[in-house]
Each structure stands twice: as C-alpha cells, then as structure tokens.
Image 1: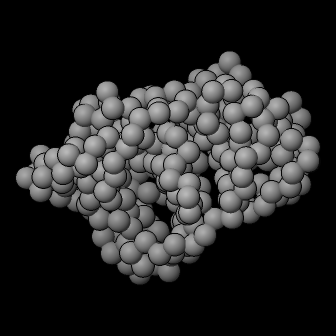
Image 2 (image 1 turned 180 degrees about the vertical axis):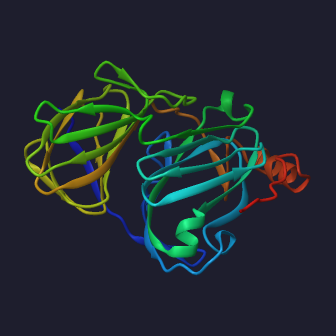
Amino acid sequence: MRTIRKIIDAPKVNMGGILLEQPLPYRDIDQIDPFLLVHHWKQEQTGGKKQNDLGVGPHPHRGFSPVTFIFQGGVHHQDSRGNNSIVMEGGTQWMNSGMGIVHSERPTKEIAENGGMLEFIQFWVNAPAKHKMDIPSYQPLSAEETTKIISEDGKVKIGLVAGKLLGKSGKIKANSNLITLRIDIEKGGKMRIPLPENFNAFLYQLDGKLKINSSQETSIKQLTWFNNDGEFIELEGIENTRAILLSGEPINEKIATYGPFVMNTQTEIMEAMNDYQKGKMGVLIEEFE
C-alpha cells in the first residue's frame, strides 16, 4: 500500500482576473513529474454575454499537453489546426501541443447567453523531449465515450481517460505512460486502485471527504501526493466525493518554462517565442454562431 508523502490545501490564485484553486505547482513543489500544473475553476455564469466575452481567447502552447476535465457545463475549443469542438460535463479535452498550436477555450453559447454553472479542472502533462516537436493533435472525449470502471460495491465509479487499469484501457492517446482517472465515490463506497510503483501519483478532491488507506481523512480542495512505495491505494467515501487521480511514469528530464511553453532548454524557449511571433504555430480566427 502506498503511503502519503504530503497533503496540500489548494491556495486560490488570480489568473487574469479569474480566481481559481491551484494545488500544483505549490511553494517548493515545481512539478510531480510528469504533471506540471493543476487548476480547478468553478463559477456560476450570470448570462447575458457573448462567447468571446468569456473564457480564454487565442493563445499558444508548445511542448506539453494541456488537458481539461469538464465537470459542469461545457467548453468550446477552437485551434489553429482547424479543430472546433464542444465537450460537455463528464467529458475531456486533450491537446498534445507538440511543435506549437494556438487555441481558445470558451464557455458554450448557451451558458454565455443564459448563464449556468461552469466547473472544470485543467492540468498540464509534460511531453518527453522526443515528442516536444510532434505534429499537434486534439482529442475530444465525451462522457459516453469514456471507459467506465465500477467498484464491487457499486458505489465507486471511475472514468478511465488515459492508460490502463484493471484490464481496461482509456481512449486517449498520450505521449508518455499515464493513468488518468475521474472518480465519483458515494458515501460508504470503497475501492482499491492498483498503480505501478514507479509511477508518481496524486489525488485531488473537488469536494467531499475521503478516508485513504483506512486511516488518513482528506477533504475538499486537497491534493494528496503519494510515495512510490507500494502498488495500490485504498479509497473510502466518508461523504459523496468527486476527485481526480493522476499517475504517470516520470520523464526525468530537465525542463525550461516560460508562460505557455515547456521545453528542455532556455534556447528552445526563445525559439518557441520567436516561432509564435512569426506565426509558425498558426493563426486562430475564432468563429461563433
């Protein structure tokens, strides 16, 4: 059984006027290799707006995968490779940014105009050096398409997005070895989740309360980081709880970062900035109804 290395209470951060929880990076924890960042955002939209008044407009990425798990509402993705897609609650947007791509993330037209709750988690997954300059790709995954795993007691429901777990495979193609899970646990539900011992792993709770490994209680907006000293963790719902579990084989490469670019050297960062300014990552002209 894996022991707990650290429990982090996610602080609030201000990202361009948007307040959200950021459990990673945190103080002296720059990454939990290969995971670089976790943002949790939940806000009631008031309505009476246009899509391009809300969300995040066109911006570039290179060298990693920004991934969005949608929990309430829907997100409209457009990018410079011609992808134009809406994913609703329970679904995932997974983008391998590779050599460079420009994209935007907006609430759906219905939420912008009529209002409603919008909640999602975005996390960044580093790419190995050999894949940082791949051709970019975008993979949308609906709730219905997501691989499902249910505990023996029927009270723990897992959405397997990427990787393999308990004989099943997620549908997302990642460029490193990962297991990424969306977890819904009813009060009293219990489940043992196997993980390769060499995979780094952490759990983040959107809400509720859990008992981990029959002993440690954890609560809303806490990130639980596990040691690499066992091949499973045990979860029990003290209350109804929503959580994500991210686990992956560490890449163990030096990284250099600047805003939306994650590379291995400062020279590569300068090249990324130069390529973006020259339009080599493409141009996105958003289209709305």
